Image 1 (cartoon, rainbow, N blue to C red):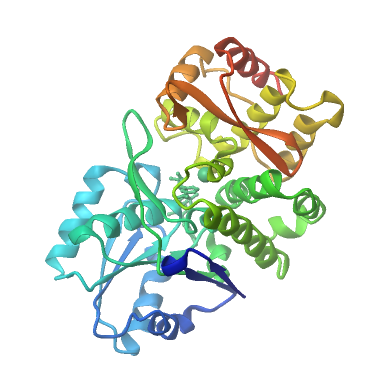
Image 2: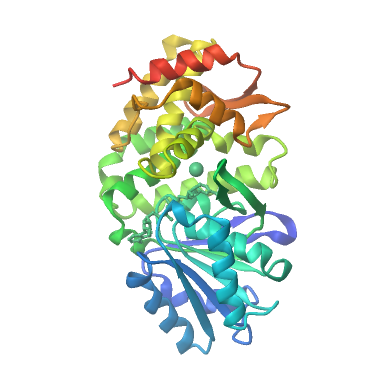
Length: 366
Ligand code: NAD
Ligand code: ZN
């Protein structure tokens, strides 16, 4: 399966398939990355035991010279301190301006490794090799970043990969909780773009949760397709691309208030999407009779995702955290809200008390 992210001279393919790792060298070659260029793999300490040697063997057997750096697993690795460590390691390994970084892992490794590539010697190419379901989202679109204690993804860049190479066989070793979290972003792509895809996800939830072929490949393909279409229209988020942030204004606030601990990204986004649907109903953007919030809750629960705001979150603190997020414009909060299943709108100027009331209701959802 092959998709193309159409960004003129920055266009790149997304390859999706079960067991495609052996094709990596020839795909690199096709993208102009030949054996005279040193490769630098960034991965984490949970992914490395499963896949690092495999990828190294495949690349080295075709004559590539590779070095690597392993970061600790989890959101806590998305820091400036880790950026410096990876950079030090790349410098010591002799990476130069013709070198290519490979991010082997989930969204954390993709965001961190991609940002390293964006800044290493003012920018070297990189390849995304996603190993989580969630990374069908993060590996496409060129947003790369690390977190700042004040807020998520506050230090970053737009740096498009040269290739997204997705061997879905890697999902077999992913912990269940991470699989569920990945579906949050898959469902998000349905909710923002397509009622038909949302219905399809709903219908095949069971097969999808079991990572059954061809359903899982189809879901990833469709998710990547929607993402790449949105990104192609607005690469650097001047406007429409922001619809991809459905659930993220609320979600990022939860993530930063829980210090990137209790809730993982997909879970926070799931609760955030419920919040967005409740807020949309509250301000009358969507007709209550359409049952959009209930439908959102139902499908997320089907994918075993949380939908309720935990009691310990204080609505006022959440509001303050949201105002620190990037998704503000002239100090005003910007929300992506559903108009129906499969379509959203970007809305500014919502009064603080509407948000606070929504957060209170969000604690009662079940
Ligand atoms: P992650 O990278 O932390 O991976 C989740 C966990 O699974 C980690 O512990 C990892 O070590 C482990 N893991 C990964 N692949 C595995 C495998 N195949 N087998 C066993 N274990 C495996 O998290 P994630 O959910 O992939 O990504 C979340 C991050 O992505 C967040 O930081 C979020 O902000 C970012 N994100 C970025 C974008 C973007 O456009 N750049 C979009 C969405 C999300
Ligand atoms: Zn996300």
